[in-house]
Image 1 (cartoon, rainbow over the protein chains, first blue to last red):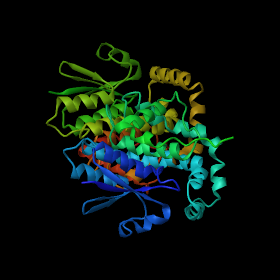
Image 2 (image 1 turned 60 degrees about the vertical axis):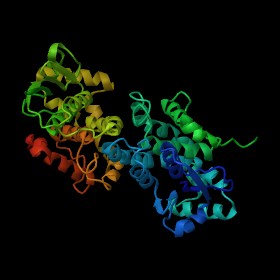
Image 3 (image 1 turned 90 degrees about the vertical axis):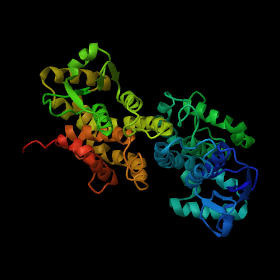
Image 4 (image 1 turned 90 degrees about the horizontal axis):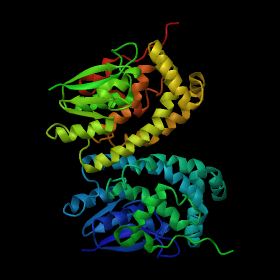
Length: 234
Length: 234
């Protein structure tokens, strides 16, 4: 049976960009499950499945509705134990939470800084107005001011990835010899940046960039099916 | 059979202080294995087991000698699979490596800054001279200059623990409902500080401090068998 994935999009429904929805999409592909995506704009999220969550992703699997990417991954591993595991044991479940918190607190703030104007530009008029109002209230400043910290923050951002970079000297994936949900957690954050903004977060020679490329190759190149954001024409 | 643990000490052989040796000691206790410690000073490390490693911990288990705390934990889980697991699956093994890298890159530099003069003061004359020379070469400055950054860095250090703090909102241990080697990795770093220095790294109200107290309670209060460093008498 096909699983529905409510997937955040902007004006272009073929360019889903949410880091959390990408985590869920990769988890579903990892399990080899058939999905059908429901392109969902910011202003439509409150109507998803009767308003089950303030955020996407949300999935519907038959009668079962699950919100939140981590909860979705846990659900999929429990509901489909015969398919490839997303956690590889209880230790992996517990520690994936640490990696989620690290990614959210380390990578997300900088991607927000770097891509916020691009994310705004991806929305249609009504959603752009919502996005600006919501994010300016959250940050207590104009989107343009948020983005002003981008260039000065790049060095510190790259340095903050050192625990991941250092891990990748031991093993090709966060999950070990092959990817687990922990990889998709961090992948989602960088894929969000890749799709929204032409700004280069990582140097090609960075092993983190090389790991990200390996993740883009996974599941028949699922992540590459959406092209990287192009720089605006001169 | 009793396992030998070569454990780093200073003048007082009853105050082992190395973060990495504490990781190994907790891992051995977690497995419920009998151990005998061999108090080892910095200058004695090159003679341990014929010079097998530049660093302790080293363990000898019958004919088997293993160096490096992470390798010791992996060895113990493989050699004693019927005893409580230190990783709880392959995912836990892979992600414990990330937590090790995070701890090493986030906690260790600040503990070094905060406790370096105390660590120096714990050594006898010959080992203190070695420690000063070795560390001053590593850092390219005097120990007193390393420590000068302590007070100014405290706020940033506490903030850097946010991924752990945030994880502990979901679960009592990094390993989930009960501790795994990943907990001992971070515990080792904070225990090193606790034993070496009276400087207070954490506020009592911090959930990280509360988690650390839970870890001190584990295995019949193994971590509490060495008292916290006392402030020098006025």
